[in-house]
Amino acid sequence: MPQLEANPGLDYQSQQYKDAYSRINAIVIEGEQEAHENYKQLAESLPEHAEELIQLAKMENRHKKGFQACGRNLEVTPDMAFAEQFFAPLHNNFQAAWAEGRIVTCLLIQSLIIEAFAISAYNIYIPVADPFARKITEGVVKDEYTHLNFGEEWLKANFEASKAELEAANRQNLPIVWQMLNQVADDAEVLSMEKDALVEDFMITYGEALANIGFSSREVMKLSAQGLATAA
Figure (tube, one colour):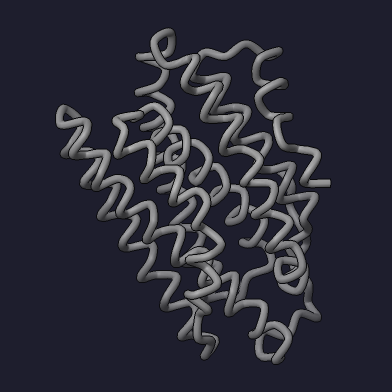
């Protein structure tokens, strides 16, 4: 897992830092809100797992409140309009898939892509976060592995029936992640989060999830590479 040294010269109160943080903080708040709503919808479609999914949804809501507190601690107002636009492509794809009953696609978007994206961002952020946000984020990232595990276990149990839809969903949605990483790269750099480290950590986390579900090493490499050119 890539780790960055905390930057002793990082000024959490500078205008430049707060400006970048207003968008990064909004992204994590919106990401947790999206996850909260997505897990509630999945609970409707997977009634046999409804209790567990509702618990995951509640956990995501707690995370959202934690990250809202991080913004207040730095006296930063999150740019929620930016964050909603940032998540719109994945949001729209999830909602379209859910409306059509494509639960495999929904699980790939939420339980694999969004959770892996969150885990990678939090892993890279923790070493350079302000002390208050570091404590909050360390607690959150432990929970995110639980959420990733739910999607892995369900898709692993239904792998053969899900494989073709997983491949199609990956083709449609993974390129969006690279666009998202590009979109946030400049702000992340202000926070001392290197884009290359974010990409590397995401690829490791997402690739491990694909392998755990049942894809071969060769298939994981092929699936992980889709859309990667846009991350260059």
